[in-house]
Amino acid sequence: MREIASKGQLRRSLARRIAVTVPIILLLGFLSGRSAPSGDENQWYLALAKPEWQPPGWAFPVAWTLLYALMGVALALILNARGARGRNVAIGLFVAQLLLNFAWTPVFFGLHLVSMSAVLILAILALAIATTFAFARVRRAAAWLMVPYLAWLSFASLLAWDIDRRNPAGETLVPSGTTTQIRL
Image 1 (tube, rainbow, N blue to C red):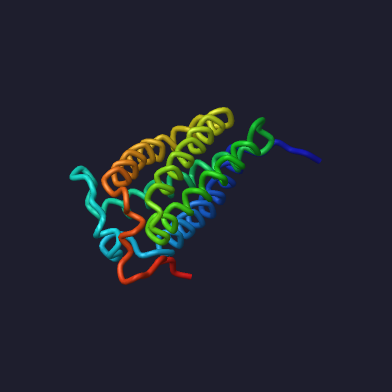
Image 2 (tube, helix red, strand yellow):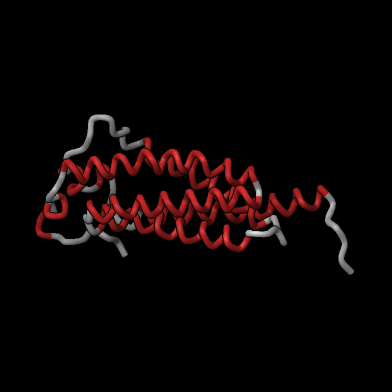
C-alpha cells in the first residue's frame, strides 16, 4: 500500500539526509585538502608570485567548510525529492563537479600544474553552474544554496588565472627536485 508521507515525515527524512550528506562532503573535502600540503605548508606555493588581492590563508578552510556544508544541504534537498523530474541528472551533475572539485587540490598543490589547475577550475565552475540550474528544476532552495559556491568558484577562477599569468614557469618551481607533493 502506498501512502503519502506527512510533512513531519518529510522533514525528518530531510534531516536524516542532511545528517549524512553534510558530514560526508565535509570529510571528502577535508581529505582532498589534506592530499597535498597547501598554503604556508607548501614551499612551492610560497615561491609562487600571487596577487595582492588574494585572501589570507585562513580564509580558504573557513570558506570551504561553509561551502561544503551548504552543498551538502543542497544535495540532501535533491535526494529528498524522490520521484522529481530531473533529479537523477541533477545528482549526476553534482557528483561530476564535486569529483573535479576534489581533484583540484592534488593537481595544483600536489602536482604543481598551475595552468592545468586554472583550466580545471573553469570546468568545475561550468559543471557547478549546470548543477545549479538542474537543482533549480527540482528544488529552488537547493539552487540558492549553490550560489555562494558559484561566487567563490568565480573568484577562485580569477585567482587561479592570475597566479598562472604571474608564474609562466610555475610548474618548474619545485623545491629540492621533488616532482609531486601528493600524500597517499
